Image 1 (tube, rainbow, N blue to C red):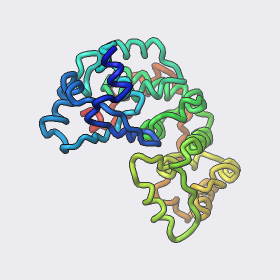
Image 2 (image 1 turned 90 degrees about the horizontal axis):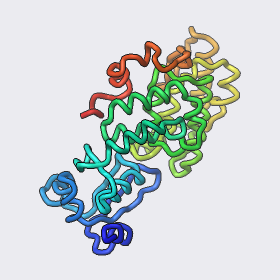
Image 3 (image 1 turned 120 degrees about the vertical axis):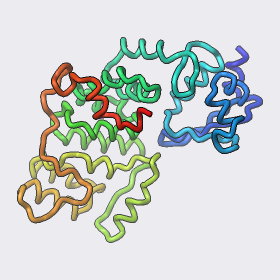
Image 4 (image 1 turned 90 degrees about the vertical axis):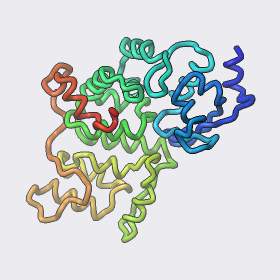
Length: 294
């Protein structure tokens, strides 16, 4: 097929996309006329001054695999797609397939697909599974490949079916180990804040930002001391302050800035259909910021 040959070979390509949603940037080439013909969004980008006049287009909110699939269906017209790039095909078929094959080992990627294409009902179903089968989700190897924004979305939930916050902590540590270019150890020095600021790039996994959302105050002193308290991502000063607050709710030592102060267990017996998940629109509003739905 000519379209497939053009896509795979890059012959006569006159634009390229910088995929920066994954830990390592990837470059994918394309052809302006083919893309503009398929999508009015691409037409605006390339020919109507919608974006900067450049042959290099940054794509930072889509996984490389997802974008490759999009291009495949444009060049080969193999199936259909809708919404973000306004192509008159694909989403309905993909959504129907995902509905029938939703499992803990693919639910995070399904959620990311649903978020990208604004399939709100699918997003709710994915979040119900993530919240009710959290242990299966975070223990599966597929969790190591999810987007950073998905991790933060999970950590923002009030209800997660986990053994304890330790399970979330160890899942984050394992995730960071799979992305070594995004890791950095923190020592108890006066330059800590400057070190943290060096990780401000939104395309990196800021493990400290994620760790701060863990409810350490729900752990026992022994659990914290033998686990998170030994982490190189938490300073000795911070670990001491957290341990003091775990040991005594009335501690005069304040919690480190930005760390969760909640003592409420997230590990409620959450089940599909429970009051926390029954109201789909309310649940959706809680898990998805309004700006993300615009």
